[in-house]
Length: 415
Ligand code: GSH
Image 1 (cartoon, rainbow, N blue to C red):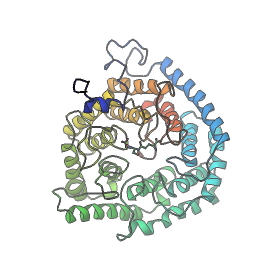
Image 2 (cartoon, helix red, strand yellow):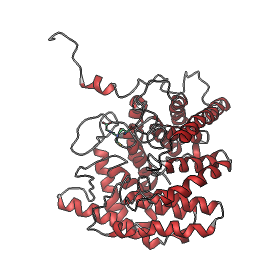
Image 3 (cartoon, rainbow, N blue to C red):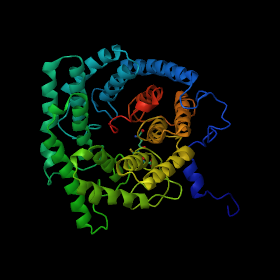
Image 4 (cartoon, rainbow, N blue to C red):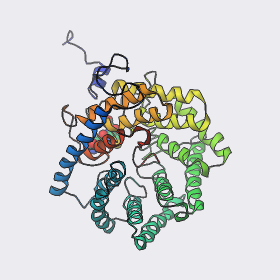
């Protein structure tokens, strides 16, 4: 009715997240999250986190035994998401049994790849790269080259400017670049020739320059996916620029300062007063706060830009993005990495890693506490509830990582 309570835009937006129940600063926080020196997580917090990891792994195990879908071997929602988690657990828990758990999964996954999709997260380079890493670690040396060759073979589409391969992380060139950089880091520089890395970087820059020119943009690089100019980490400019910054040794100084930097500055101008960012250039709404769209991805880009260019304003943009995550980042969508609370927790953790500020560690740890209570908030169940990017496996990855906050890394994204 005329006198009824109007449904305001902000209350619609609010329905996407839970009000953050935790005090915003360390001061006055009674929960024992940080120890007395305030620079480290308390033993109690770490013990809780580790216990939760073990309990949630039992859930994952049972579900995996019941219903493993070999039709999807991707890192994003499929079998290789579990493989990635187990490799991670073998590292952070220093327990080789997880490698043994991953081995039969990767062996079968590699036989199921489809010869399409070029990215680490959604395509063949995921299973192939993880295979190479596992075989390398297990000293099954004869198996490594075929995996790496499989990854290299995909350069054909990547380097062809006429192919319809996009540039973003989830399906495109930046997602392929990640696979190359990961192989170099985990196995050795000799496995992937720097000239290949350079040619992928060039292809990404060429593509961005061409679109900016075609659209007569005032910014040197522009990207689109499915004809939309997405901004976020998964499908957009932020993810592409972040990957380029991680590959900066393969860029010339001119490329870094005259192409990448002005494009970051352009993105920074799009930041809302709240700290969040729009999901695409055509979208004005301050709504999505996920790693895939909005502030969490921007935290990674701005914080990395601060490290690379050493300009304080980037850090300010990153911290502002962090504020919006703190306010609106405990999501009703679930606990996953891509559009859930664990992905948002990783962004807060990255702010801690870049600033060393215990207030940021405190905030990330509160998101960790939320994720320890997985399943208890009445969130919606994702389509692939156990998966790494939508579901439980991502939540476990985050909880296992936060116990060692300086080394934590958002998987398939941060090197
Ligand atoms: N299928 C996904 C799940 O079950 O977890 C949900 C899809 C989803 O949330 N997609 C992200 C998104 O932001 C992009 S990757 N969707 C738009 C929205 O939330 O309005």
